[in-house]
Amino acid sequence: MRVKTPRLSIIFLIVTLIVGIAIGYKVNDVITSPKIRSLREGIEDKDDQITAMRITIDRLEENVTGLMVSLTDLTELYDDLAENTVPKSQHDALAAEHLELTEDHNALEAQASSLRSINEDLTEENQNLSEEYEELLAKYSEIRVLSWTYFEAHSLRINLTTTTTTYNKNKPIMGSISIYHENNQPFNGTIRLMLWSNYYSSGTTSDKFSVHGQADYSFSYPFLQGPGTYYLRVSEIRDAGGFTVVTYNEAREYSIKITMG
View 1 (cartoon, rainbow, N blue to C red):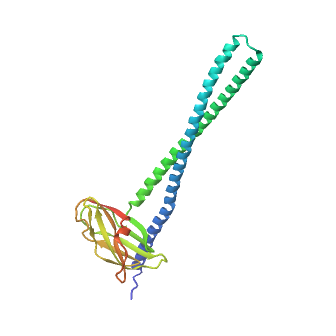
View 2: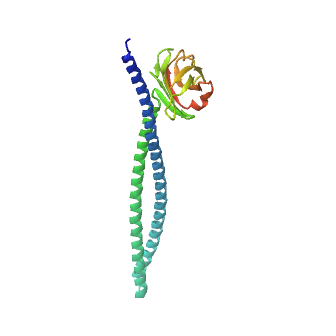
C-alpha cells in the first residue's frame, strides 16, 4: 500500500500558512494598535503643552507691554527732572526705579523669548508625531484590507481568508476558515458566510460549511447585484448540536473587501 506523503506535506504546509497568517495578524494588531494609541496620546499631550505655553507667553507679553508703558512714563519723568533742578534724593530714587524697571523688562523679554523657542520646538515635535501617526495609521489601514480578517468571540478565535479580493466576473469566492477555542482545541460545527453590498443594502448568504478546526470553502454565485464593492464576512457559526454561538451582528465588523467588475 502506497503512503501519500506528498499530499500530507501539502496539507501540513497549508495549515501552517493559515495559522501563521492568523498569528501574524494578531501580533501586528497587538504591536501596532498600542503604538497608534501611544502616538495619539503623545499628540494630545503636546497639544495641551502648546496651549498652556501660549497662554503663558500671552501673559508675559502683557506684562512686557505694561512694563514698557511704565518705563516710557518713568523715562519721560526722569528726562523732565534731569532738565530741572530737583533734590538729589528724588533724582537718585527715580534713577534707581528706572534701572529696576529696565532690568525687569529685559528679564521678561528674555523669558518670553525662551518660551517662544520652547513653543516652536513643541510645535515641531507635535508635527513630527502627527506625521508619524498618520503614516502608521495608513499602514494599519492597508493591513486591514488584505485578503483575511481575524476576530475573537465567545472564547473562539476565528480567521477568515480568501485567495483573492478581485473578480472580473461572477465566480465562486474561495478561501479557508479556521476556528479554535482559546485552549487551542479545534472547534466542531458549521459556518455560513455572507457577501454584503453597502450600495444595494443587501447581501447573499453561502451554504453551510462544516468546520473541524479549519476547512476550505467555495462560495458559489455570490455577486447577485453585479459589479461593485462588497464585503465578505461571517454570517453565523453553529456548534455540532446546531446551537448558534456567533451571530451576524457579532461578526459584521470584521470583513474582507471584495471588488467585482
